[in-house]
Length: 356
Image (cartoon, rainbow, N blue to C red; front, side, top):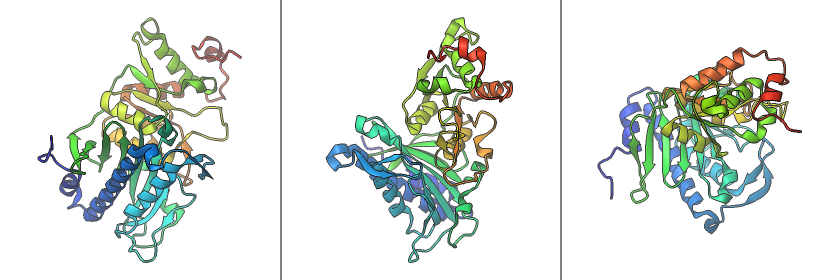
């Protein structure tokens, strides 16, 4: 059935932001992002038939081996957003430095930051992947950008969202007035509004964490997970389910649809890294959406959106989802001395203690 009477993404954006300062440019930018996501969706769906699977010999700035689709998706984002005159510069997880707008194109008043293909390690096994994006105001509209222009705290975002490429392609977006969900109509080629007001329940009985890293966790995180795993007979007096997809977009989308809490905390596996997820391309845009949906997003010690970036590819811990669960995890961090990770309470009695 064709849903021709439903609100499209273009209609929604025009109604919401067209009359705001810079509104037309923001609408154009977000529609360019949507176009990029449609192309990536089609490329992902083709899989091996389109020659999009497999790895390359190259690595990105984080030293991670790039999938073919990482590079293809990065190029698609650039090609669909650089020419319209509404961005002053782009920054991507896959690029070492900011991408300057070519001299033959007008420079605009916004900055676009994005993870072109989150969870690309799942491509070859046909698990959902996605794209994440963030929009900031350019400090010097119309001028060439510098790295420092992108180092703005998440609260300064004017829009953020993600697209998830699963059984259906969906785009979840906020322009600062709640969170809306759109589903791609494969016949008409439009994103149509299917989720009017997406909210995250305050409480949950579901959490997501990579348990294989348990021996590296901080005591507050180990305490939280141990209590959840103890179920009805433990201090929480209720059973919890544990999930892990290894795709931030897929994890976030599940939480937006049915609640839950996600943890990718700081740990001692790579001591020099204060966290695993990228602040500007992953944590900040997801946190913006989470807060707009009534949830909470934290480093464990405070709001993600208050973190002031110091470098383009900065990593942070990320804990987000149902408000009461995130508050509890923050309280555990506040009540545990930060004196390293050795703590007999969690090493000898924890459900995930190291058996070596």
